[in-house]
Amino acid sequence: MVKPPPITAVETQLVLVTPPIAAPEAFLPALEAALAGGPVAAVIARLATPDDRASVNVVKTLARLVQAKGCALMVEGAIDTVARGGADGLHLIFDEARVTEAIERLAPDRMVGVAGLKSRDDAMSAGEKGCDYVMFGEPMVSRHAEKNGVLPPFAAVVERVGWWAEVFQIPVVGFSPDIAGAGALAQVNADFVALGDAVWAHPDGPTKAVAAALAALRQGQAT
Image 1 (cartoon, helix red, strand yellow):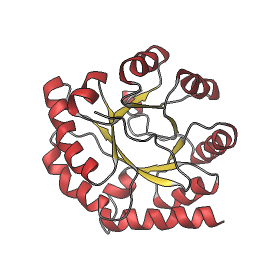
Image 2 (cartoon, helix red, strand yellow):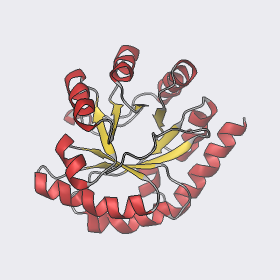
Image 3 (tube, rainbow, N blue to C red):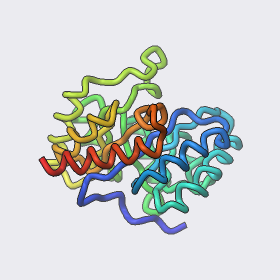
Image 4 (cartoon, one colour):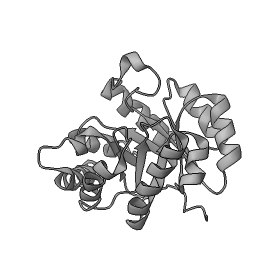
């Protein structure tokens, strides 16, 4: 597999974060609807199955749809699952040893994005190791089961994204809990804005949710 162009942006682009997926067939209609709403740079797939073979099959199924739409597929899962499933890269929660291992094993053919950054030092460490992007503001599901879905204060996320965008060249992704927040992240020059349940649980459906998010990004960049 040839590594896709690095995830970079001139204008703020949209990233979709899936709910935990065990059976992809049930989720594919929502994902296809979301991708019909406008250009999406990447999909970050969160896997719910602990079984290696099942995880690989989930990734293969998602990759066929996502990559056909011109999007990168990043996987929050095992390192081996990324290559075996044909994904474009690994999205992982920050741990120095695991970041090092992932980059050593996947680069330069596949990307490594790092989230779960508790401090500026963590983010700078990930950048120094050669990650392809850093992400601030994501739900803390993978780190603390007792804090499942808890989000950090959004104002702090906006501040952290703005700081990174101003100082560093490595792309930065800001997670927004809602579509309105996408504009605030675009305003501080986030390279990418990630949305999760704001798209999947939108009352008008994923297609209109993505269209609304893209409009919010454009408005944020214009202010």
